[in-house]
Length: 314
Image (cartoon, rainbow, N blue to C red; front, side, top):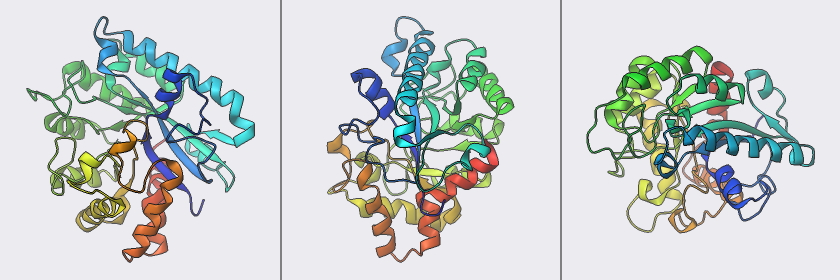
């Protein structure tokens, strides 16, 4: 799998579902038509807080609809594009130079509703990475934009334990500071699929040095998000992505940083100059090379770190 690209987060499945588009529609930022193989994409099912307004269990119903839409798409497109769903480390062995892998994830623990058994049901449907919150508070804990950071709820702690028992990896992106540390104290499998460095850009969605170190202690990975607001202040370019990568490499080493684009979760105007969709992700490789990263280091950042982590944790 030398040369594989792995993207730890995008919302293109949700966009496809909402607009009833195929996953090879070139208007999606991530689409399987233009992704250059070998490629592995984490496809998130995102639960917007609006969905939960009337009924806390609407998230589970909506999430199921999105996941079912994915499987319909998979059955239609799998042979044409040589798609492989990744549910275990054995599935990773099936990825070769002509394969596009898909790993199913969720964003916002609102997808669980108020029933822990829904985590088991989602695992059976192929979910292997689960985000705990989005920006606001939910039944599990506090989000990054919380007004009162009380951390994980008791229900949230119970849910994390179920995820650990099943082997679901916990995604700490979008969690509040205290929720993050509550998760770290419970879970041994932690990723930040799309988060950046607070010391470069002061934003509540970004991670402090200590948080980055705690993730690294668990052999976890931080996927650099391509949202301009999390990267820099003015005229944000690909080289701002490299700044965040450099910082994490210098702080905790080359094995704990990757890419988490947030394609289709970010508007095109909110992406760095020069990046519009999945075909532009290779420009990050070029920028890393310009900044004196060797081939092995570039491989790790662009995909190898995630492959190693998944082999050990799913």
